[in-house]
Length: 144
Image 1 (cartoon, rainbow, N blue to C red):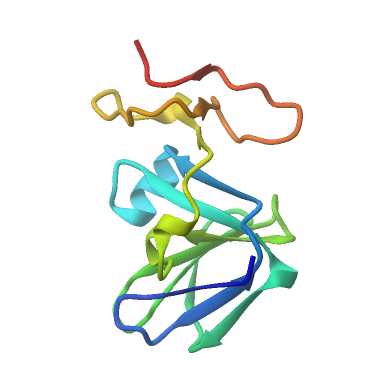
Image 2: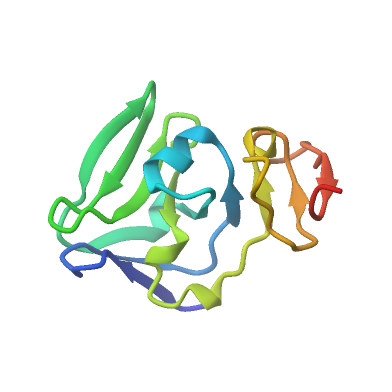
């Protein structure tokens, strides 16, 4: 699979990871919307043992209990999310990938918090909250 790279807008902070992400999801939760100033945030979940910062060190903001959001202190680009619920993962913002086309999304999380005026027209599974083993989607595709 090779190495995937990413960086902030000013390129002061860079990262790399080996192999494929564990998952790539659109997140509709209020917290992610606030952190990215967008109606949806898209993340790639990477095992921490396959992830490394290759240049610079991101700043950290404790956005809620057990959650840190990482960003470039120079240009402000949000880069990643780490949380106590996922101690073995780094969730990088998909838009920071050098080539986002490499890893298309596989689903939508937290659609229970989705904005009523925003919809992504794809056939991917939608989960009321987090997705994971044994959690069934509430639907596939957009709201009707």
